[in-house]
Image (cartoon, rainbow, N blue to C red; front, side, top):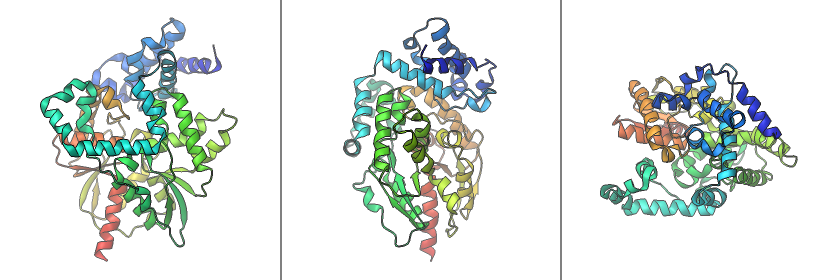
Length: 420
């Protein structure tokens, strides 16, 4: 047994099958199926070592896990289920390979910003043509399986060319930061990137936008470690010439992955030190703003706001107090905490494309909790969560809106400017 497999087996042995993980598993709550909780999945993984099970026989147990780590909140020995699942997915991918479209996405599109940009532009044109709506009415999207069913979740793409041009030089900045704009804000939700730039500039922070590639999380999540390492290496190379105080992320998933570079590359003799320094500079937007002192010159916004913790922000980065502090600091806002605010919404990257039915059941529970707050704004800090939650609001007819935290804060600052 190799060292990595031995370490994995020893980690699996730490699960004492107590069942406390049931309380934190969104998939179990949606399905009621025992093996979907951590102890069930880990028992199946142990079967690879104890009962000669093949990893390729565990497709569903490996890939219908949200890897949200809700189970870890309730696990006495603190078994990191997501890491064990992701290691097993990597073994699965080595043995079975991956579909060509997935390989093209991870090895080409997400590693070439220009190609991703062209893809986003093509999608925006397709939406503008009205063909997706026609396809829905004719029932064509139903023939596309889960992808066709999930198509309405994709919001209207607000493509903008050269979003980097919105970054401007400041005369005497307090801080200089690099903005890891991410795939979503750079190509699909430029309004989030523009809001982030304005908010940072209002704090006298000068922002540069390097040509970073994808953070690597999608490839990591599907077990393509070669593509993941290629993306990490490219981002580290781009960061070498940066003279900045921090690397800012407005996407919880990107920020979580970037902070993980240090751990993922700790055994790489060439990149370990560089990765540790890089990860040490990564900050979520809310984390950074609170640390430097949030500007309080805001206008009044009359809203009742509730907040959803993205798993990759609250649970993985341990950043949960800062977003709430920012929301509560906005004049006129009434904040209402929802039940299970830190429970996964069911988006989990592309989970709603691969496991649509379970994703929607997880979302239904989330929207029930949202509706009980009677809020008119649902705020979060992750583009994946934002899309899922916006779809939940629409499908549940809640009569409220969803917004990224940085957009809400930007509105408060803009409101103050209008009054002055």
